[in-house]
Picture 1 (tube, rainbow, N blue to C red):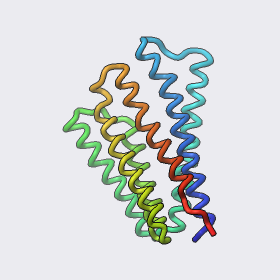
Picture 2 (picture 1 turned 90 degrees about the vertical axis):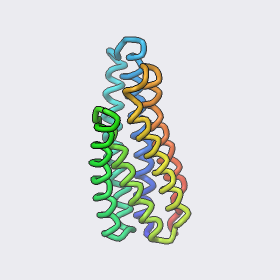
Picture 3 (picture 1 turned 180 degrees about the vertical axis):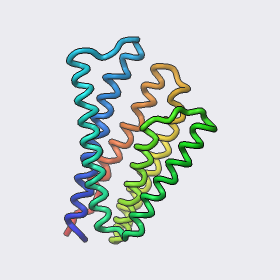
Picture 4 (picture 1 turned 30 degrees about the horizontal axis):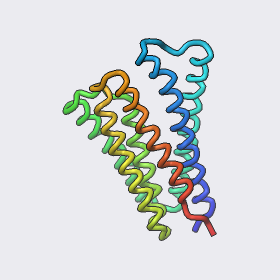
Length: 190
């Protein structure tokens, strides 16, 4: 087992959990006031901006770490397949959500499809080194997180103010929790 690759994946998932926490903080600061008709100002606005910038930094760093570790363990063809699959899935879902559900495209669709691709690569890497239990856990969490995120994405604009706010929180909380679980459950390198 490659101890460095496993540690990269563990660290990456910890950064992804931090990303989701910071993104959720930004969401609460900037979208909760919408329910009451207000908007974030002053110090609260600064905290919100810092939260989203931190979320971007943690997300990029987390994705890079997970993908570096997974690429060390997975065959190159599997890694390329995850990337191509994610791009194709995004394009298909973009068309379906726009045409069938009249859903205005937003960044979130790209983010959770990219997250699914990253986790697929992680699961393939773990399976490739014989860690089938960890691979199955990562795959199951990725599928659940993806399906729930897609449902929330489609429903968001169809809901009232408070339900849409909660709908936006669900994927962040779920993917953040999944990231913590994966970080804690990755096999220890020997």
